[in-house]
Image (cartoon, rainbow, N blue to C red):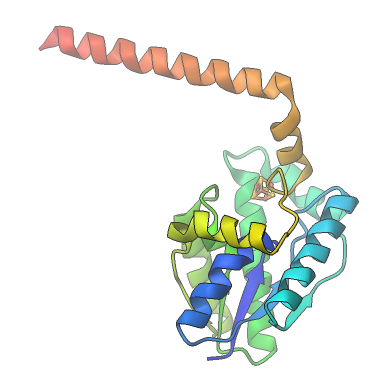
Length: 206
Ligand code: SF4
């Protein structure tokens, strides 16, 4: 089966490529990630994706346009909704992958996003299924998450650059800002205290 594999980066491609080959498929990689910022980081991830593809002899294509402004134009309004920015981000990348697959004669598509233990897996699956229907191309689904550690091990063996944050400038801030980490810790603590108080009140009512 001629299958297009959307690659969010090199390290996340390690396990999915292994699995697809075990299933008898020869994937072709496709790097389309307008969500990666700033420029040097996007360039580094693109270079690493190419390095990975060369090391495992996988053909790949890449959209080499850095699209910070296009991303922000749509991500900023989406921030008003809970998880809105990530929904927009998944949707853009999965739709473009489905469209590219259909326009370039692929029978199916999938994405290394289904390897991530940090993303909203079920939501991305629903989106991919709906884009498959829209563009009349098969979505090959596999939950690659069980191979999380194996993928990390392969990426180390191949000496690939591993990124320290998800991709967009917001996630970079969330990764490094002490103030945001402090806020999140306080919110988690407050939620835990609220849960315990509810449980105690419920136990008292029994
Ligand atoms: S956090 Fe990750 S998934 Fe969410 S918008 Fe940023 S790059 Fe995309």
